[in-house]
Image 1 (cartoon, rainbow, N blue to C red):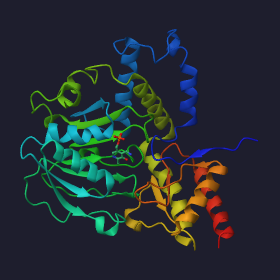
Image 2 (spheres, rainbow, N blue to C red):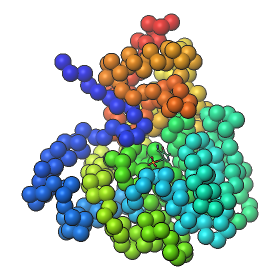
Image 3 (spheres, rainbow, N blue to C red):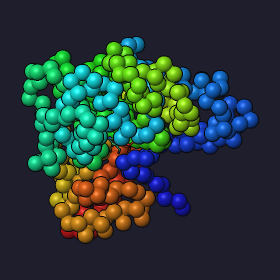
Image 4 (cartoon, protein in one colour):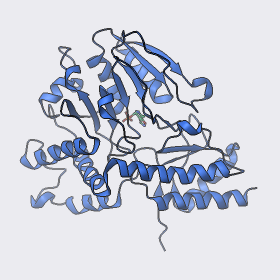
Length: 360
Ligand code: PMP
């Protein structure tokens, strides 16, 4: 008998079975072309269909207004930590940032490397990032934007309410709850998100940016020039064809499943099952403050590193893979992105329950 495998990795992450099957089916000959999708030109009608559908499906699913561009980049979300300040921080050359953990700190570091001043307006470092930094007030309008991480992949926190930035633009790194939790896109000047969690495979990063924010800086490096990519339909050079095709399949799947509101409902249900178990456990602790808890990344600990190690190994033996926490925080982390079924979380909770009984 084959054990069902559930992959709780934080990214690259589990994908819908139906998408993997579609890829298998399409792989030798895409749309009866006699060519694999890996082999077709990005300057072909076949690929035009793929990229245009993916963009439109993203617009539909997220309710992206017409005055925003949907752009496809390579270089991961990390490259956008460079691209966003170079494109947008062109007036004050200064941005504000809420320090909610590792990825916010990486965004700060990359912005500073290209000469942008970064003011950290609030930080929860002293709380080991088990809470979210709260913006008290942003009265002065001397920042090109405020950067937040909507979901903190490593620390397991997520904003359910966005900070009120007044006249200052809001930039959101949505990598780990993109398409998994609803936000009003109009509240953002720019959203960035890597694809390898909720939108398929690594190699593709989405940027959604309001038209009036771009085209102000001349002679940026072409590969990070938002205005150039907007004018070239994200095909200034060879785009990551296979990653865009895969994203397109995931987006079609999302539409069939009922869209982002349905995904958020399921993610609340899945994470709720796990948090409820952890909160009632005598062995496990979920360290994040309740109001700040992520729907997609759930860190938890026993408080005993050797026991954590034993648990992670035993979990793998029964097909519950990649529940080891990030090296910076230790313990365990279960990532429950859109493609993780409820049954996977049930199996995890059942396993944790038995482990607790056996290790009291
Ligand atoms: N931001 C967040 C919230 C992330 O989780 C990650 C990756 N785990 C990144 C940025 C960096 O993305 P990439 O590896 O695509 O550069």
